[in-house]
Amino acid sequence: MAWTYLGKIIREGRGWVGIDGVQHPTSWGSWSDAEKQAAGLVWKDDPAPYDNRFWWDADTPKALDDVVEVDENGDPLLDQDGNQIVTKGLKSVHKALVKQQAGGLLAATDWYVVREAEANVAIPISVSNYRAAVRAYSGYLEGLIDAVAEHSAFVALFENREDTVSPFSNWPTE
Picture 1 (spheres, rainbow, N blue to C red):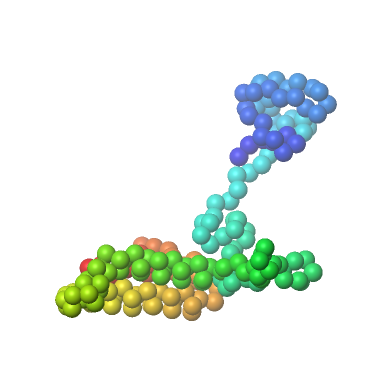
Picture 2: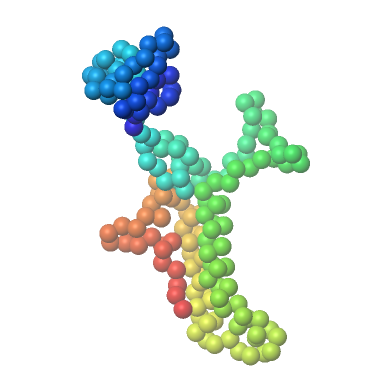
């Protein structure tokens, strides 16, 4: 990533002043690593890449299940209304996303259902079949989510591979 001095990034081609008041030249980038380190510079690598849908950072996976939050003494953390704070886990978050996606897919044909209820006009069989397929697929995906016991297996559900498409990319079409 970059060389830093006292936690601040030092840009090549620009001079900088050390804590001792020494003005370092704009050509400091041509110094050897040992010279840079002797002047107090520290190399900072780029953070490792990670998918923030599943990880808090490159080393910290998000919990699969909901987490009841507690303080350092193990006492419950409460919100402003006195309710226990619960951080939703990956399973809860992604099951809600599945429901949202299914709702969005069904929304385009909801008018058929309303028309049937209000005017007793039958829903075309193709529309009924599609709506049933979306609901069934939503249940299937939620079942996949519930069945996962390890973080790596959960992440694998969402990966498209050369020979397989993620089930989350494969919803029914009309």
